[in-house]
Length: 313
Image (cartoon, rainbow, N blue to C red; front, side, top):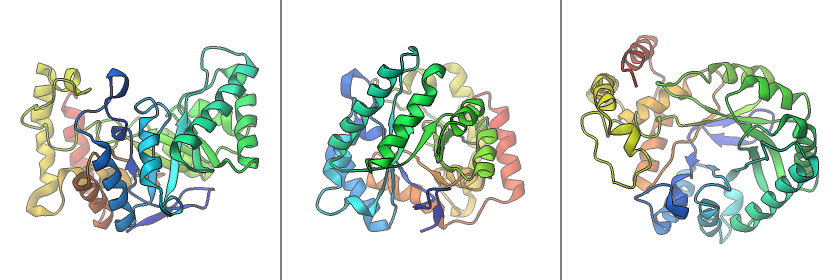
């Protein structure tokens, strides 16, 4: 296992964690197909066996169901073997300070209850708060930290202007950035993370599965799959045909396509931990295998970027 320090938090986390959006399932008529609570719980337990210790979820994943599943999975003395990161969606369209503060406080209590824990290791804003409420939001997060209900707080956003504004208002410790071979706009945020000693969690490292290799030559999606529209168009089919050239990264069984895509992210400046989703123990094991591989060569990285940029995806 490869462990890295999550910025100023000092927390040691595996460089590949577990994204738990999928564990929310199909609650409220939307979400992820092909999941069961039983397999999700077994996946968390397998992560414990392997030493993978970062779990990332949110109050909004499956209308809280992802957090509930994790709460069940972490019973019986398992809680303190993991770093739990979850998220709260702040009010973004109303500048009322009292409402903004109450939203954070109530959401935190809800997450603590669903997770069956007395503290959250990393509590992240799931959007940029209304600008008028930024000071009170940061003060409220600091209050929760002082109470011991959260250990550290951060934000899930690529917007460096927003990150800088929040840094000026409080002890922001982490950023969650969207970044992968196909979408590299997060590089500025990652450089800022490095400069400010912020821990970084990387979401969408497989571009919602587009980089997994599963869809390169065929689109075999469940009718309820949230990716159906994006992946089944004629344009997407052509793009996947081009993306299949990325399979050069797997030649000779050096790595799976998933591991190659994750290694690309792990080798990027400013990255602490990638958080690919895992619907099953098998997916978890494939993801975690990226930690044991050597970095991509400069030539491999350059060729991968050329293929991705030429795909039109």
